[in-house]
Length: 247
Ligand code: NAP
Image (cartoon, rainbow, N blue to C red):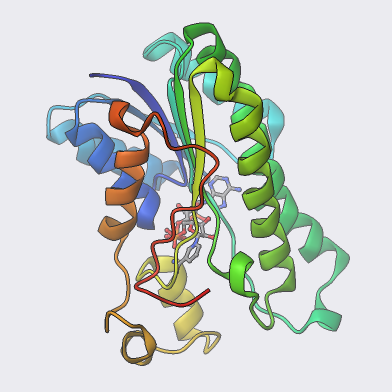
């Protein structure tokens, strides 16, 4: 069935692949991204395959911009039925070196950004009596991670928000789940590797039970299933896509 989907962070990495996979299944996809160029490139890429795509440049931390973006989606495609929140920021710093500004920006993008997008879109799903929400959290919120206190705290908030909304909206036909990815080979991880903040892909692969790093396609496969009609009895769950890391 063709649904109206919004994917935040859809201009890069796993968000981009989620957009492609949702479009390949006949959904109309709105790509929310900080980068206007990346959002436009993703929309053009999807449109080439014949699917409907809409690029929306938006900072998810900016509530007015998010509301404006959702209004564009309603005008172009209709009410929002699927929302995937993949927009995110990472950073590495010893705890005592994290500045108040860095802490606040991390929470503003990763946690408040998720809140902004979900609160703006959920009324459409309530009105329809159907909805699918998938948040992208992080395995680091389950395991902890050194030099990432602000990131881990923000993603722990996303996990909690997901579980709270799952219970609140279960009677409305809306499922709310989270995917906490392990190491996924995306531009975000490559940037962190270039700066020496995380080990290289080969080292990660050797330490991962399935002996490879994850790919955006691994995340997208789980995500499109959670967004499907068939996944209606799955809600409030963290679906771990992490190559078998024990958490
Ligand atoms: P990515 O390739 O950097 O994609 C993240 C996207 O989010 C980028 O397009 C980025 O835009 C966008 N974005 C960042 N801040 C934004 C904002 N304020 N408003 C709107 N868009 C914003 O990274 P990824 O690895 O695919 O990450 C996707 C999600 O997975 C993130 O939430 C990340 O924390 C999470 N995650 C990743 C891994 C991993 O191993 N890769 C593991 C666990 C969790 P710009 O490029 O313009 O900044």
